[in-house]
Structures are given as C-alpha cells and as structure tokens.
Length: 341
Image (cartoon, rainbow, N blue to C red; front, side):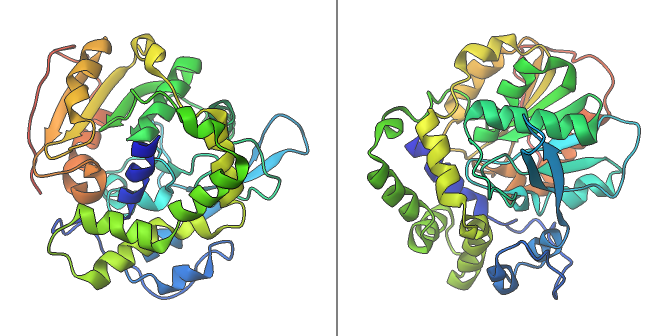
C-alpha cells in the first residue's frame, strides 16, 4: 500500500517534450470543481477540466444515486468504446495529454473517475471498497456504455480493471494494462490503524509538500514553477470535502488483491510498460506469462506512467490495438517494440 500511495503522487506528471499538450485557457470550469482549478497553468489540464461532467449512476437502492464524474466523448460510434481508468488516488485529469490523441483517431473514449477518487459527488459517503468500486463501474457501464468495451487501467487502475473483467467478463472485449500494479496484497496493516492515526496519515498524503516532493523526485531539470503546477493538477481532487472519508474507507476495507484473479482473464490484453519504470517492471514478464492471450510492448525512455510522460507513444499503441480485429499472433510471447515521441 505504501508503494501505491507513492504511485498516486506521480499522476501529476505532464508530457515531457512530447508536444502532445495544448489548447485551453480561460474559465468555464464546472462549478463542482475546487476553485483552485483556476490557478492551474497547464493549458491542456485546463482544457480537459472544462469537459468534466457528472452523470447519475444508480447504485443498490433508488435513493442511492451518485453523480459520477467523467469525460464524456464527443465521438460516439458503433466500434468498441475505450474506458480509461486512472491510478491510485487520481482522477480523469491524468489522461489530459493522451485523451485528445485518442479522439483525433476517431475513437470513442470515456475517462471515468473510480468511485472514491476524482470529482464525483460523494456527499452521502458511500463505501469505497473494491466491491463498491466494481459495482459503481458496472452501473456506469450499464447506463452509458451498454456494449463490450476496451478497458484501460494504469498502475493500480490495472487491479481495478482485472477485478472488473473477471466479475463482468461480458462487459469487456479487450484489456489494456499500463505498468500494471496487480501483485499488491491490499492495504495490509494500514487497514488496522487506529482511526485517528489513519486520518492524520491521509492528511499528510494530500499535503502539498509531500506531493511536491514526489514530483521533484520523479523529474530532473524541470523548473520548480512547472513542477508546482503539475502538483496542483494531481492533488486537485483531494480538496473535495469527502476525500478524507473516501480514502479512509478504501484503506480500512483492505484495498485490492487480485493476484488469484489474473489467470481468469481470458480477454485479449495489451500490456504497456515503460523502459525506465523502477517500480514494477520486473514483474511484467511474470504477469505476461499468466495471461493466456496477451502481448507486451515497451515504450523507450518512459517511466511508470507512460500515458503521462509519453502520450504519443501510448496513444499509438492503444489505437492500433483498438482497431485490430485479428487474433493476437503470438500469445504468451514477449514482444518488445519501442516507440519514441
């Protein structure tokens, strides 16, 4: 869990020298976003933030309806839609550089905030354990997607994707896992912390100094003002009043442990790994061997979140995978091909 907390810090990274970010500026932000969105300078983060919507998702009872945040596609067609998840303690803004590239390719892409993270209205304080996150995603899919999708999960979002796919196999046509963190065994001892200690911990987790420190570790030679702006993008959702309770709910629930589910995934799977990922890359060959119908691709000069620091490369791989109707020619054979922006 401690590693997953650090992974959440990395979502503030922006595209480095990729030329993928652009557009945006000015106001017009949704009223439910924290006011600090006005202070963000990243033009593409501003542009995508203006597109965030809340859609009603009916949960277990008629009175339990969650206004759920997402990026709704402009393009809706008959092909399999992409549904983009995000990392631990992140939001749909994580896709700010890759999302427009997918749209430009004519794909129907939804960026969905996982229950408990992002910008959904959680005033009712629903449970945010793995089962509730799965149920919420299914109800979102049932209401708005309504056909088999290509589910994309980076880092801990890969655990969300694997868990969902095994429980609702008919809803998923293909999987894309980006540097997947699927061998974590939940939150372990953090689930047994005294509540007062746990709340103190999550307050530290969302603090500007800690998040800023995480970004300074992730980059060399980046101006401090730029790192600060990226940090503010990554922690924007933490300013919502229910973030503390939602994070504690997930922590105390035990988190995700999908190790036993991996071999049950039968869908075609694309595993994308960053060449310079120092966190879980050594486990990807093991994961690839456990998935019966998977290929693996490497992106050169990229770290743990290539969809953030190499969006052109990730978009290229996802587009090719989404538009390919042929069977994977070499299942369970590692095929590394580097793409450099």
